[in-house]
Amino acid sequence: MKKSKIKSYCKVNLTLRVLKKLNNGYHSISSLITFAELCDKISISKTNRTKDIISFSGRFKKGINKKNNTVSKLLNLLRQNKMLNKQMFKINIEKNIPHGSGLGGGSSNAAALLNYLNLKMKMKLSKKKLQVLASKIGFDVPINLEKKNTFLTGKKNRIIRINQNFKLNLLIVYPGIVCSTKKIYENNKKRTSNKRQNLFKKRGIKNLVNFLKNDDNDLQKTVIRIYPKIKKIIDFIKLQNGCYFSRITGSGSACIGIFSSKKNVIYAQKMIKLKFPRYWSFISKTI
Image 1 (tube, rainbow, N blue to C red):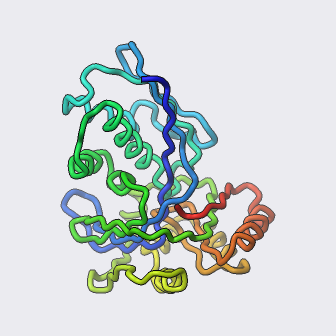
Image 2 (image 1 turned 30 degrees about the vertical axis):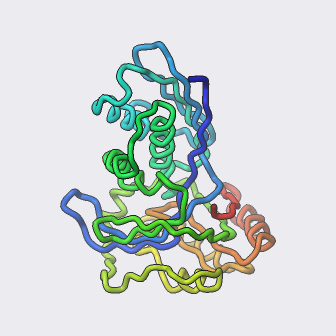
């Protein structure tokens, strides 16, 4: 196997509702999830060494545990299940997705690599088996196995794939705060009744925007309470021309804004850079 390059895309929680805490320590959530063009880049090749060589590069490499991360966990899991035998790999992940931002970079890395190894190493794993393995790495990893708009129902974490391209104009703003998902959930008191959960079924950008405007992220108040500066970002994005709505994604700290046009989102990014010059931002269409 020659050196190969894999793109590992970020996920964006357009909505997120916390339902209840499960026996396994995770929380049952419902969420409408999309994917953006922002991606990490994974380089992989075989090596004759006795251990995997895993390294990180790129703007957001800082703070990642080189010995205990989603990629090392995946490789260890596959070997425990005798799927890779003794083959070792040299892997570099160029981190373009901010760590601790709620954009699911680590989960996406594991999912992209699992799909790649299943194909190249001819493991012939079914979709169901891939999901089982992915769930052992992390809660969000199964979601990242397919780059389709997805509804996480909250009922036994059932995943519904949506065969519809949203084509939303997206602005992501990251203030450099690494949010602990565990800490955010532990401090969150807001819960949403299962009865209030509705699937997005109608097609069309207007119907989608109306659906999203009437929904929310249950973790946002908790994140703002712990990190007050995030509210300033959300409020500033909302004030920009053509902004439909703004909120955090996942458990933060990245904030998103959905805009009516590319022109508006480009102008909004310019305003963000003037107002918050130290914050990182990215413009994308959802994929």
